[in-house]
Every structure is written in C-alpha cells, then in structure tokens.
Image 1 (cartoon, one colour):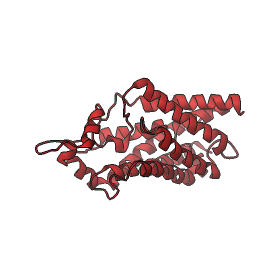
Image 2 (image 1 turned 180 degrees about the vertical axis):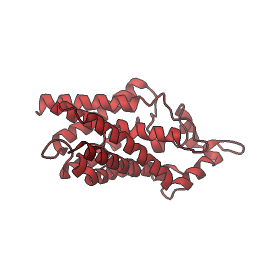
Image 3 (image 1 turned 90 degrees about the vertical axis):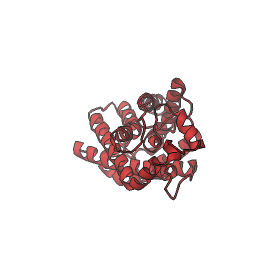
Length: 264
C-alpha cells in the first residue's frame, strides 16, 4: 500500500464511519428526527453497521484501520512505524469530514433542536429530563453528543479506565481474529467480526462514557462541533477531550503487548 492509498483510504473510510455513526446519534437525539428516542440499541447497532460499511469500502486501499488505537497496535505488533503519521492524518481528516456531513444531512433538525426552548432554555421553557441530563455534562452543549462522547459520571480515572478496557477488547479482537492475511489491516471476515465486537462493546461497556474507543472518532467531530455555526450549541467540553484520546491509545498499546506475549 502506498502512502497516498493509505491516506485516501483512511480519509474515506473514517468519513463513512463518522457519517453513519454520528448519523445514528443525530437521528436518535434531534427533536425533529423521525428516529427520535429510538434508544441505545439503535445507537450500538448503528455504529456496528457503520464500522462494517466503512471497512468493506476501504479495506482494499488502506487496510481500513479507521482508528489510531488500531494503527498504534499494529505498529507495535510489527515494529513498522513509517506509515503511522499518514494513517493518523487520514483518520482525523476523515472524522472531520464525516461530522460535517452529518451536520449537512441533519441541518434542519439541528436548527429546530437548538432553537427549541425546552432544549436550550429561555422564556417559557420547561424543565425536562433531557435538560437535566445535559446539565450533568459540564461544558457540553445540547448536541455535543451527536459529535463526541461524554461521561455519565465524571470521574477522570474511571472514565480513562473504561475507555482503556473497551479498546483492549476491540483491538485484541482485531489482532487475533480480524486481520487480513498480510496482517496489516482488516480482512473480509475480520470486518464482520470487528463490527459485531463494536456492537458488543457498546451494549456492555458503552454506558459510562459513550465508548469512544477511537481517538479520531471523538477528536475530529469535536473540532467540527467547535467550528460549526450552530445556534445555541454550547461548549465542546474540551476539559474532557483528552480522555477519549489518551484512554484508547493506552488500550491499543496494552492490547498489542498482550498479543505479543500471548499470541505471537
């Protein structure tokens, strides 16, 4: 794989991942969406199918890492670091493009949601459960969850630990069951296995933090949230932003270490 193939593949693949994954979050969250309040099952399966679609689309180009934690783990496993910056750059750019596409697809719903008094407050606003939940997220605006993750209980060490644990499960599954014959990315069957593992992580471990398990998935859309001209969008919660970056990277490194000791 050439550097240009890797960059293009990771950009396209991560954009698809975030478009479909962020799209299901928008569908469930935004007040004028037909899928409003569809629930956690819709989100977890939506993200699983997003992984499946993105991997099958771009695996021939880049191996479809689509996640800096996966790229880091494969680099540690193989000792080959030369293309790591190219993977990272494509993943971050793709995540930003995907988040921007979610905004375009749900433009009217974002506007309706963020000008609704029950959502953003103001004269005549009523206290709602949704508003009470939003208040727990210090520095987070009412639609940040469409773009990035946030904890239900803000305890830094636990939030980092949750992201580490979830990422270890994901990356171990990729390394032991998901890689193609060359070992440099996901294979055909590996894409399906990985997608099902993502669904499992979401159902079992996603509750505390929203299971970023992917630094690009969180950081790229958070940047887009900060830049977009959304009315009453509130903060991007940069005080928490390091958790879904550092936690998954540590988890990927631990998974690679476990693989090299136990499976290599």
